[in-house]
Length: 123
Image (cartoon, rainbow, N blue to C red):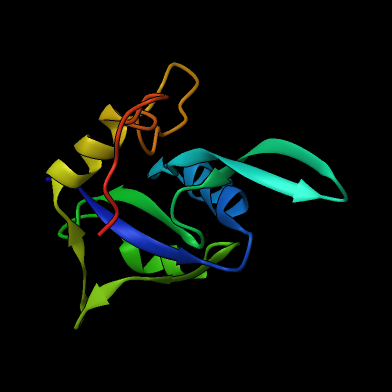
């Protein structure tokens, strides 16, 4: 039965690792969000990995040759407990996917819960 496992990538190599893992036939989930980038008085929003240096790959640890993942371009290591890949609970992946918008970006929050004029107390 296929399950999701975490893969640690090389620095800023999440897209490269995802591409090469997909090319090998693995199911890949690389959640991204919009990140505010400020440089030289210029602000823009860019797509960035939700978990820098990590992505998820769908494998069946019993039948998939998962050890090949570790030698994939862009991959640093497969997160394991002992000699077996560590399984990420399905409900965590489902929750992340449920927060994706129509462009596939994960919404981190639904905005500020306060409106102009609301009274707040800082403790």
